[in-house]
Length: 501
Image (tube, rainbow, N blue to C red; front, side):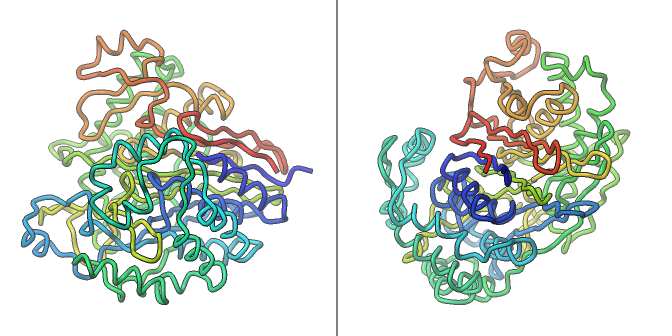
């Protein structure tokens, strides 16, 4: 009997999630267990020190609910402090862009509300890998080598993330201890107990902006998703502070096109660039923490709105992320995305914990008149956007991708592949892609993309990318065919797999 399915960007994570399903857990349990493994085995992409956002469609529910596990800036984080330290824009590495980690508390909220198991069995696969070691993949080895210069500046990071070669074993026994503590005692200790004190001390030692009180005050937020129609489907995205409205805006504009203009090639590329250029200035103008500003949804969801004079903001830094999706025989479907922000986050590992801290604060602006300006205890505009879509009131697909600024563009291409082209989920996530890079100038084109030569000649600033480039994102997707029938795909650009249990 098939209990469920899970698709993740690392085979060890997919297998851990599938084993939870075999043991009687549901899709939420499987997703949390798999994500914990990714926090160990994919440190260039994610960590316990990062943020997590998820959409959950529970059995019998009329629509999904969103969980925003997005951490806030520290209470010491002000424009004046950054300027006093000589910065005109947010630094990308080191202690200053560190924000409160949202992931661990979000695991707890997901399991409390929807799980079948407690946290203990869900942390076991990850803690075992951290303690005993796991083989470094070619992707991880490449990142460890490429980012070595600045990673080696931190002694604890140098000790725990050396530049290993493919196939060598990487261990993090301190992180194993933290995962075991979460399993035994829940998430409170991570924010308010011994682990929380160690995190706060590590930040204070480096003159950071997040305090012990900031950690203790952290809470996730249950939110109502952004909802819109696409080709007879109802699509759900996360609301602000995420860029879910940007993904919605792109899809609402692409929906107006006929199938011929959505076929991969030069014509589609020009349409994708056009709608991106209409929507992203709205994102840069409006999206931030809704606790700090009123954010209009209508300009994004109305295809007739074309911004005038808003301009696009400074290029967003690239980011690294994991996306996974899972479903079970009970009817649960989970779309989950989690990240340490940039490659290896801040590069700071808190002593005694093995926890790599995120650099999510790098997305704040230091311009006083910018909606997403740095302020104390604020959530920055967030790139993480899991997605779901329903057909006739029932969940039909879960999809998403890593890719920071590029996530709305990648999501659009994956959904078009599924809906307009009728591709299988594995084909939909594996197909060659294009992407406008951060800042809006030029175009990245995978060399095996249809009409690549014509695109490179016909689109200003277009440059070829090697097939399977990680800069095109790691996407996963699943389609629900019935009560215990699914099709799923895992992006070959990563190290993942689809596993049924």
